[in-house]
Amino acid sequence: MIKDKSFLIVGLGLLGGSMAMGLKKCNHKIYAIDIDKKAIDYALSEGIIDEGSTEADSQLVGKADVIISGLYPSLIVEWIAQNQQHFKSGAVVTDVTGVKGAIVDRIQAILRPDCEFIGAHPMAGKEVSGVQYADPAIFIPANLIITPTEKNTQRAVSLIYDMGRELHFDNICELSVEQHDKMIGYLSQLTHVIAVSLMNANDSKDLVKYTGDSFRDLTRIAKINENLWTELFLMNKENLVQQIDAFVAEISDFRDALVQEDTEKMKQKFVTSTQRRKYFDR
Amino acid sequence: MIKDKSFLIVGLGLLGGSMAMGLKKCNHKIYAIDIDKKAIDYALSEGIIDEGSTEADSQLVGKADVIISGLYPSLIVEWIAQNQQHFKSGAVVTDVTGVKGAIVDRIQAILRPDCEFIGAHPMAGKEVSGVQYADPAIFIPANLIITPTEKNTQRAVSLIYDMGRELHFDNICELSVEQHDKMIGYLSQLTHVIAVSLMNANDSKDLVKYTGDSFRDLTRIAKINENLWTELFLMNKENLVQQIDAFVAEISDFRDALVQEDTEKMKQKFVTSTQRRKYFDR
Image (cartoon, rainbow over all chains, first blue to last red; front, side, top):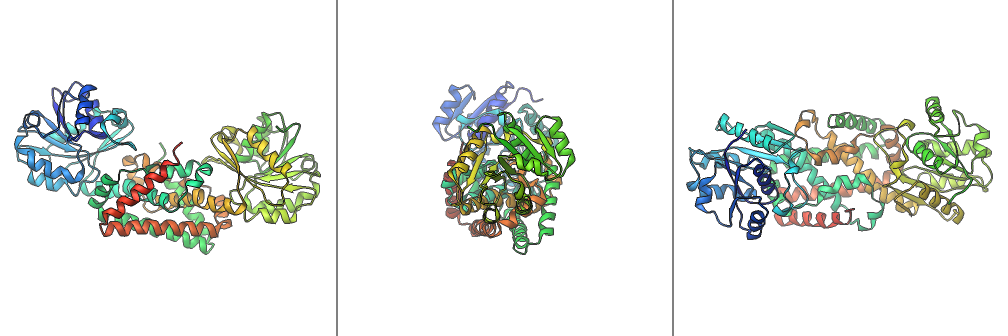
């Protein structure tokens, strides 16, 4: 386990706040930087963090053994570039970003050689944002995916595993940056595009009272932070477009079978989906 | 409430069995016909039904005040045509079928004038089938939709309302046959087509360990009875094709916005879906 470490959370939102709470329980020192004074004040008053600032305070930045970026993906590279001069030598920097290809190489290319960036993606969240909704319980059923590159040391990889265990993630595993982004394009981003498109395909306010669980399950994630997800989608554009195309080809194939009343083909598709879905039963 | 009635369930599967159990608790007489001897034997041994037969026993058929068809949609018209000679005069016949346009008019056109058919759709189910999984609790969070036509009497409509209350449905409401089939094409059938197509778009067995709740939620209904759903889809083909086309147009529009990096359009779609989904919060 990790001992006597200090963590700096940069961007104290839902995920950063939840990590702060979970790590604080393990008796680590927790610092935070967020431009929103309310977020810092709330976290201080609730004992979620030990110290906080609304600016990139060089003293706070310099005290951290581990820096966790909870920033929007578009801000992370620039923040590191501007503040790395103050990092403690040997600091490990990590993140929570849902795409990796667009940032990992860029950060590792610019980072001071005596520090180390290792990408991490806690696959956890809620339909709300902000530190006031933070709750380390969101990690308990979730995956933590680590995306090490050839530039990473075993020391840094082990540290993220240890941190993930302290946060009680259900599963911690490693993927390459490319594998991660392809997987996330299918399992997460495509599912969000589908939910949003299903919700938008009809103005269905008058249908609420007839709605069962299927429709609610498929549209739960249609409640979505438009700024964050627009960034995430653009940063994984090529993978996501491929996944959308594969899905549209599949649903169009189903449509054609229905139009042609090709019952054998329809049944085969149902049998395949039933078999495949069984692998995902918990 | 209904008093001293006898119900005949024809086709004792998950839904028919669950209705039998719920109605039995209200002290009605429950009879059942199913070609599967195991289903009848099980239901008799568990006290789910009072009498049962594997054939369309004319005595059993003739004793029922209410006949509930739990048959596959393709069988229901023929079963009524073949057996109505034995129906008790004044019997009310109803069903559980998920599409209505393909059957209601046909049944009402052939049914004896001293009996009455009124369509009903309990929007409840499980991912398993068979009377051994029957459980009247599936109706508690569910909708019962009644689809009366101009041929129906208030007596029959009231009877189905009363039956729905005895089964503790969360909501009981009326729709025209056309409204029902259009609504079900969007809220239920399209969602199943999406779940099946998402599951089939990739062979994703190796992705199980990275999978979060979003993907599981969107594919839960990809486990599907291929014979029943093929029938239901073909019987509502026109509505379902329209819904698939509207959905594919919407997701294609999203794809184009992504390819063109039209962030304003993407954000607008997220905002719309978020607003619309809020109506569906419980």
